Image (cartoon, rainbow, N blue to C red):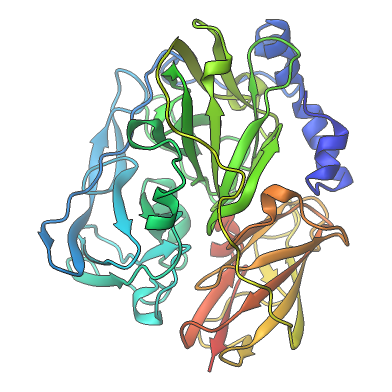
Length: 494
């Protein structure tokens, strides 16, 4: 079971330990076989427009987008942003914003060394901007918050894909609109592979499964309800756009790619089979690609924008075993937010995949020459509705940080909010976490990262090297309601 010791080891502060402990009731109820609602102390769930029995809907996987043209060095794609009506809650229709009519959007499978040319057509009635989250791209192809596509216009983004294999994703970034646009569906997967990853023999093909997590609130007509900075009421948990789904798995190894595409919700995930036995998983990757070595962990902690790749060997479970991916952190009633999906284990099948002891060689950490500090704050509940970095709200006409091209720096980022968690996302750069509250990072956080979670009072030291592109890029909280409220700033690399 997830314990206080595990929480502390993961770098969670005292307040976060308490929150996880309180939410741990759902894990206990799953372990004891009691209904989660009976164990929930956080209140009764609001009435849903359609009663969705947990684990009654099969998991689906977003479609893979085929290029309409291939050349010797590039793959060409066309994506249209448009409204669509989709079945999310069984037997109902919900209006959403989509890429190519898919919720979530279609997956682009890119290859290191091959350029992806993506034409984005805006068929909506508001401006958009498409950001490849985790991508290393020049400013004109970064999809910045002020670099928008007007309604009825189109824009071509060119991704050179010179970085290591990684689980990336695309989403809208139009400032003051990104929060609602992403909430209503403008996000999709971008999976980058390379030869080095291929040689490892990791589970692949149909055994490499993306799990795009998000939450939502629906009204009595199954319409999606959006209210800025509302974490409490977004209590329907969706995986790949399906509410609390199940997945039938064979008795063999699977690779799962977790993406937290929520606006605000943080997940603390663990596998439960209805007993008190722990079921650790092997985490093999984080935001920027593979870890140096697998990290066995009893929980997976994932804030908005973060990605985690992990492997489960279902051959260790008897056929017929049902494993719940439980969530041990609120807000919301635990009978809703305390469970994400279920794995139904089938018969054992032949499996030649493996998880080697050495996965990747991480780049060396150069000696930093500059140190900077950044404080994240926002108006506490009931006191206002703005958010700040170093006491300032976002101004697109202001450069907040000037960086010399090629420099290596250490940034100390502190969440100064008293009750509100934040995270910190960098465009362009994958950083390394070198400290959390003065302690080395947990092994699962020791890889390449572009987003780091900070509970109230928590501090992280990040090492960054700015040696790929010049120009102006944003950094911001990726709890994107906070970003839309002003928790964003700009750096200029020159």
